[in-house]
Length: 139
Image (cartoon, rainbow, N blue to C red; front, top):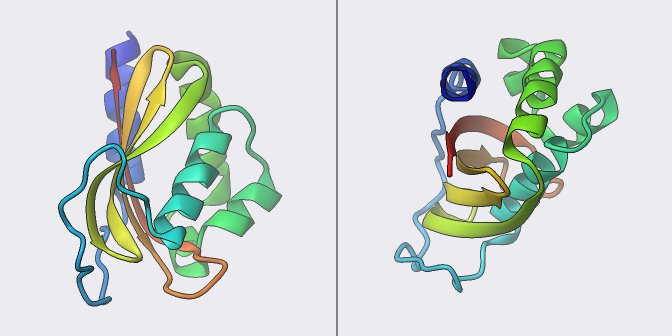
């Protein structure tokens, strides 16, 4: 049951592709100690926080209006409300691949699952997400 919900969650959140027009970063090779660029770190922390609490203010602070035009707030909130209890406490964010300062893949390490995110953000603060793909797999 857990696996099927997590897969459904990943498919639903993939409505928007993670395309970025930013120039590639010089640091595309990553490991667990590679620091995340601020836009990616900001987006990943929003998602990590959504596993414990999500509301309209949080969604508005994390996602661009273009994203929200494709994926309604209520759908985003409902998915994270379902996902949170399944993954448990999320304790770390690790880089997987940094494509640019505002696009890349990260992993969120949780008690019972690993959440892989492919993120595209706007280049300027507050680094709103334009694209998000979520894949959660049980550990």
